[in-house]
Image 1 (cartoon, helix red, strand yellow):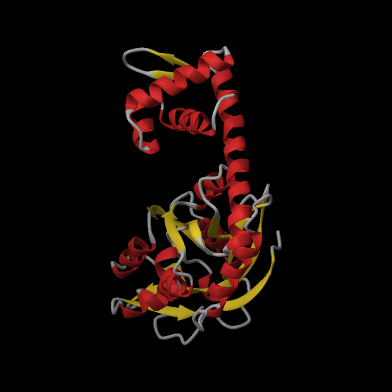
Image 2 (cartoon, helix red, strand yellow):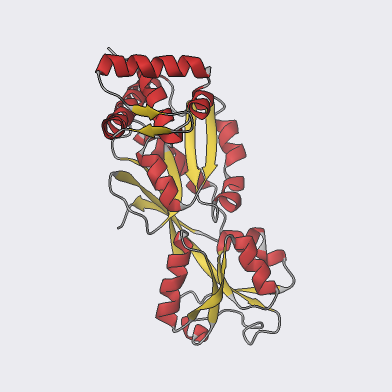
Length: 310
């Protein structure tokens, strides 16, 4: 029979289409990986890759077998997870994905305390846009992810951790600069600066614009919350920022004013969820991880762990 090691080499080569990069990813010498791929092809009796001096191309049957190999590798990891979780919960590796508009402003409340409470757990954190994190989770590259809604939940399970209020950020001299709080009607006619495509927060702010009678500033899209803040400080326009970011960064910027929305503006929030695969063997561990996060959240978010609400 072929081995799990050969399937790992197959998937790595499928992802990179480079024997050198695949070997580096698998921490083996390139000749070793090449021999194992050839042996796998001989055993299966099919050609998985077309090779030339300049490129490596996956054959149609190679693509199908590689996708099935991913499933086998995920199942084998689940077996290991079941055994490890039974003997020592919250230990070993945990691969956490988190969106860039959340991770740097939430994780400082959690990570050091988590490492102290669970010294046998090795936490690896990866930042990516939500759509990419969901894909990596489904493929088994990540164990659990922290994202904001909406995302495609097919094949995923999880918990809603908290709702994070959104704040209006305006440049000094703006007509709302001195307001203690604002309502949606205050946004009528405003051109708001938004993040670029791929950020869930962009979709949430677009929905607020539609509800409030505001518009997207068509001349600019930001790649990060820091860029949004700097554009507001440059008097290009106002924007909407998450409360965790406001507390960490925006509140200290004297060139802008961050203003909360009225308490009755319940729709001006983002829902942050912790997600894992439906078939994951570590569900109980992830629930404990969610509870750990919730217990250490700051006061400016609304914590309420509950089942996902699509």
